[in-house]
Image (cartoon, rainbow, N blue to C red; front, side, top):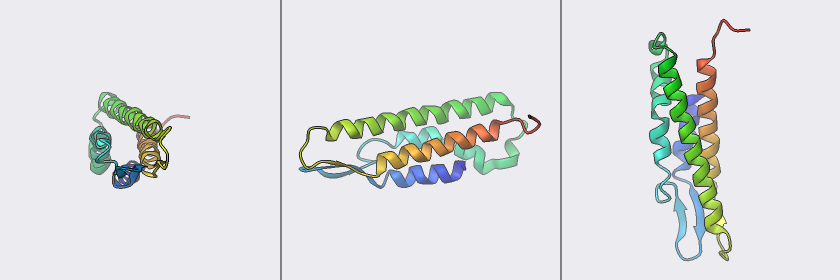
Length: 122
């Protein structure tokens, strides 16, 4: 789940976040949404390392969850930024980039939470 969500977040940066009449399409790189991938890096690294991270403790898992949640907050702010930037501008539209970034980040957070679950739980 984490790798799929990170993949969707990376693809979202190439999609248009907004299209403005004079400027044209603004993708995630130009919209400064790339820090989301930086915040998703710890979760992605832990997913790539897989079983080798077991036994690292709940502290490391909690730090990974906090950074993934920070990425989600940042992605939500970028979505709000996209919505606000097209408000009141004739001919402007919201692209698929910002919603895809939020969706991918939600998948990463969900995957991180599932990875932190105690397998001996109820």
